Length: 401
Image (cartoon, rainbow, N blue to C red; front, top):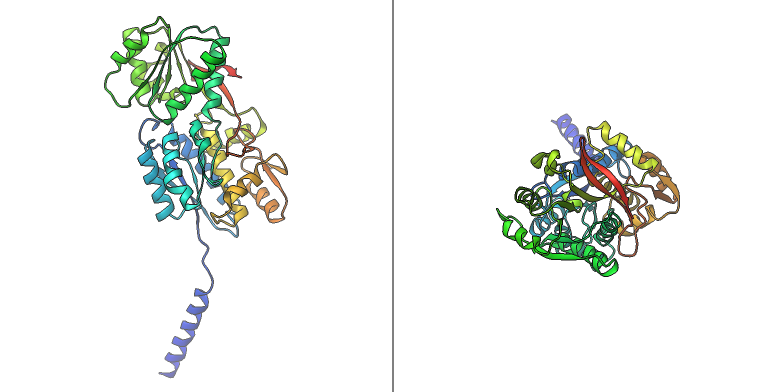
C-alpha cells in the first residue's frame, strides 16, 4: 500500500511539473476571401498564395520559439454582411492575431468598422481597392498591399485616351468597389483629359437581364462600354448580353473583370475587342522568386492578386514575429518591416528574417508585388497593365502610367 501511495505521489508531482511547462500555442491569422459570390473564381489562387507564405514560415522555424502559424480560412462572400460575419468568427472564436483580407472592398469596410478596429486586430487586404478604405479612422490597423482604385481609375482613363478611345459609356456595380473605381475614372477621363462619357450609370447585382440598362447605355453614340463589375457575376452577364445584342463594338473592364470566368463562359474568339486593367507586380527578383515558388506548389503566378495575397500574409507574419505573435503592436511592426530601410528580405526568406529580427537588425521586405512602403493611411503605390484575351488567356497589351 505504501509503495502504491509513493508511486501515485510521484506521478502527481510529475504531472504538476509538466503542467507548469506552457505548451506552444499556434499563432492564427484569418484568411478571409470571397470563396463564394462574384469573385469565387479568383479567390482560390489568392488564398493558396497566402497559404504558401504560411507554409514557408512553418518550414523555416515558425513564429517566435517554434510556434506554428495557422491560416484560418473564412468566406466573406464578397459582401458587407459576409465580411462582418467572417471577421467576427475569426476574431472572437478563432482568436486570430491578424487578418489577410477580406478580398472585396465592401467586406473590408464592414469588417474593419464593425469588428477588427474595435478589437484592435490588424487587417491587410490584398485586393480591397476602394478609395473609401483610405478614409477609415482605423487607429493604424488597416493596410493593403494593392493600390487604391483612385490610382487604377485614373491610370485606365489616361491609357484609353492615349490609345485613341473617344466616347465611352460607363456601367458600374452599385457597391463600394464599383462606385469608387467609376468615379476615379470619370474624374480623370472627363475633368482632367476632356474625354466624353455619354452615359454613366450604376446597376444592381443579380438581375437576370440587363438589356434595358444596356439600351439606355447605348444612347449617345458611344462605341465603347466600360464595365466596373466582377467577371464572375453581374459583369459577366452584362458583357454577354451586350455581345449578344450588339449594343457596343468595344469593351473595357477594370480588375474585377479580369477573370478566367469571362473567357471560359464567352470564349476567347468572342473577346477580341475586350481589354481589362489590373494591378501587376513590378518586375523584380522578388517577383521571380514568388512566381517560381508558387508554380512549385501548383499555383498560377499570373492569377490576379496572387502576389499581393502572398505579400499580405508574409508581411503579417513578419510583423507578428516582431510582436511575439501578439496582436498588439502589429500595425507599427508592419511599418518597421517595410519602410525602405534595413536589410532586404525577399519572398521565402523567413529564416533570414527571423535571425535579423532576433538580433535587433532592421529589415525591409521587398515584396513580390513591389516595395510596400505604407503611407500614413496604410496605402501603397503600385503599377498597372492593360490586358487583352489571347490564345493562352489574358496577355499584357501595355503598361499603364
